[in-house]
Image 1 (cartoon, helix red, strand yellow):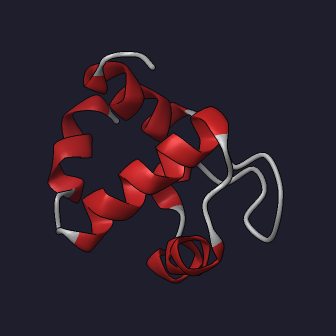
Image 2 (cartoon, rainbow, N blue to C red; image 1 turned 30 degrees about the vertical axis):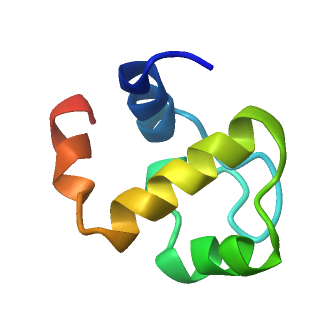
Length: 70
């Protein structure tokens, strides 16, 4: 996996490829949706890493970290 800074860039640029929030940027996914994944299991691969990362960011109130790179 790429360095953390690259993950943050991808979180603010990439969109959800499927599901209820298809085409919404990963950083803009609601916490309730991320909680659902946390309960059911995150996808494997890069998408799962991005979703887990944004979930942890939102869970811990660290969204301000994304503002400079948005």
